[in-house]
Length: 295
Image 1: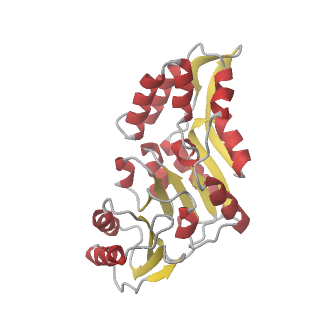
Image 2: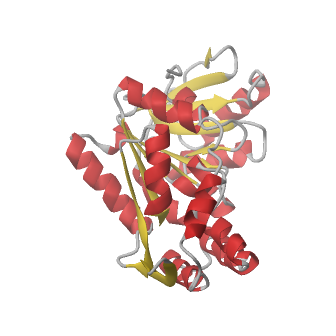
């Protein structure tokens, strides 16, 4: 099978040739065969290095992660065929938007530190997501539901998110927002950026008050994979045509299930289990991974 490693330098910089050499050596150490000469593009900012072998190989991914370490470069390992994806599934909190909306709500409610601590543990995989969500929401019991609108008004879109969604949609890709957060936010963010659909959790509200409960069932990591599978069936495509992006441990299953699953400025536990990561560029870097021009 033909596979591809793409390396991308931070915005405004050309890729350091030494990083290309290090990465090519790492491919060989990971078991890649017939490694090709680097193909530079994006005005010197990016390079493709093709090889023969399994793009889902953990040996190759581990070798690349170890070789690159903390060097200033983003990378992606994926099948060489079908570079331009037909389906985008994106997380929302700390991915498409810069904040954790639940944490922001908690801050307004005066329980920000307690909720943020639980969020951090959940995103690091220290506690399971459904339990963490229920625990955090209980702390909001009795709050006026108007806090949702106030939180949304202060929500900031991540750099590059709009151009990513609009460019992929213009090329014909289906773009969906699938979040462990709340439908109140995903429906608005989806409409604002041009996503074709959204899925999220529902917050129980009665008489204008948050009652401290999440309406079951909770959308967690396994539910994200189920949403991914349903979308693939609907479109009649395989995983090699799918791009997923997220930052937390609950995103790992969908990141590993996609042909291109990108850990976005993520927790170490996420980076350790994915074959693509972006720490230095903005979300438009995902277009470079696909060799797709911005719309």
